[in-house]
Image (cartoon, rainbow, N blue to C red; front, side, top):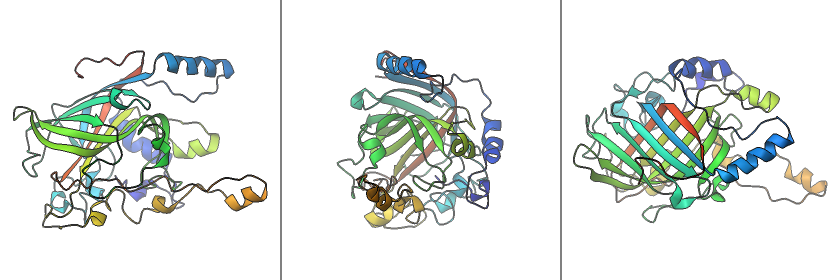
Length: 345
């Protein structure tokens, strides 16, 4: 999801005061912050925290107060040239991450375990403000359910390389930095410190129509965390929050081989995955700014890593076109010793 470039200075760095001014004003609700893993309170606290995570390995999240397609007017999906250009009148503000459409009937429930596979669960509900196709009807309530934490599904037309930073965690990891001006990971998005970062697939049900399954095996990306003040992060290596904790949920399917809304397509599989992120995103070709030749000269043998960014495998040609971005701003979250939560199967 693209963020307007005017929140950055001339040097390309995101202005901390811009993030605070745009986002915090819309998120001053009482929340229970998650436990932050990085602190400077001494070795004893670090040891105690490590033991605490071992004894309480589940991270539980309850959230409400959702925005539908925040900042959608400027995205590479709904914006000019995007695959849904005819929605521009609906999503016209596009000046801040907080300007999406407020939805009704919204709630989020999730339980997460790092590398926990099927132990990870979430549901998200919302009433759609727009109609496109039989699977997304204005006024209908929908439920999104996590079904797996895989990167590539068995139905994807064009598998893509899995980003390494979550591969070893089974696509579910705690305490991750994502995005930011370093160009290492989606330079067009503010830096996030994620309590939970997750990739996988979901099913979508129409609650209004008797819990009818309307789309299945769609790619999803979830972040539970805070936007951080990027300038301070590089100045003092502290992750100073610029927002309260939010839940950002993306569900995306851009099928190849069919005509898309607005008379676009049919797309090839290469074209279908080129929106997330855009093919010219600098992060797709950027590796950590380290002189690996100099490291070898100094006797350190290490293999230069591939870029962290990689196209999302969002082309399931057997399913309808689908794009939903929900941002829940009223969040309660914390660690638990068990994986039970009311409302989750």
